[in-house]
Length: 381
Length: 59
Image (cartoon, rainbow over all chains, first blue to last red; front, side, top):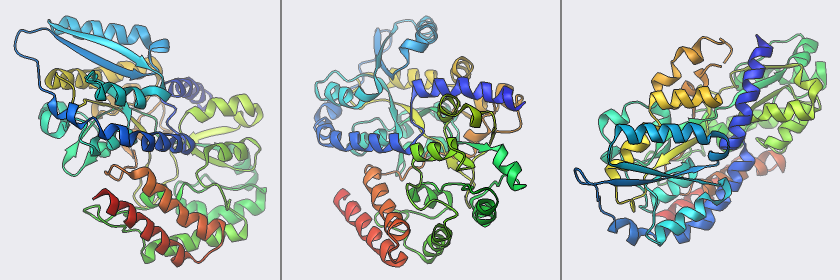
């Protein structure tokens, strides 16, 4: 079962890499740099955004400009078929599909909106979605989508692009963290794989003393706060809320173990560093998107043979990281209603399930997640 | 493959437009307290001040 699962995960990991590459903290950092550089330019789009009107009236042909990120090369046939099906079911609607390289999407979108040629439906990560939403450049789907359209998504993922009462994206495909562990190290230690950060901390010293390897590497501190259910901001998001005794105690606990040398002291959450340690047998657990597995196989085939998979370590809130790709509708779109309908179609249960069968990626809708395709294969994940 | 992970996971979002800078400010508390060995409360106080300054600029 483990090898079958690894094979499936490896296929998924390659697809995820092509699709999003959004699982690592390094890539998140890159995205942050990009979003910062685009903020000033994006602010200049508000005139175009507020000038937009809905041109769609009954019986008139509508053309939807649909932008995705790095999908056409690998999945051109899949999306062309899906678009053809949509056009056949919606006479008068034409979808023009443009696929944009990951590194170009933000600058191209800002330029298009500023130039009055905004696409109608765009594939974005959550950080850039929120950046544009904060500048009034995106449609509030909580207001303009129907209850039926909004009802299909996993609630926590639906909330990812939420600011106040407004929601600015339909969540699309996700690459949640998965735990990869070195079974040989656990056999050597005679210990079980932990399921929570608390368990991992309690076992870290014994594990290190028995194997000479770190049991786990802590996540980025920002993510640790989320995982432990510690609010980063207050309820109205006007002030920091994390500076509490609970956080002091949490950091103190981690500091105790780093000073003992039984968990790493530096580069917490650094994806590249984690994999280097894991591939050299010096780290027993990595929590990352599936894209890590193909690298482990290439760079450390002996370690790959020992890899087991499980759900990632969790903190008090029981949640792990799940970086998302989304579909958004720019305010500057002249076809809000048609754009929302098409974005909802692309991300509906049937199409997400079909996409997942094509590329083994994770869906963001409740029904697709509960489909036997996912639930019958293994109980591990 | 199971999608159970999608039901027990979240895209960690603050629901504001400048999350990346806030994330950087919060992570500096770890660097100060753990990597550099500084006082934990002082590190958190500095991170709190940095985050509040970012939020003030957003308003």
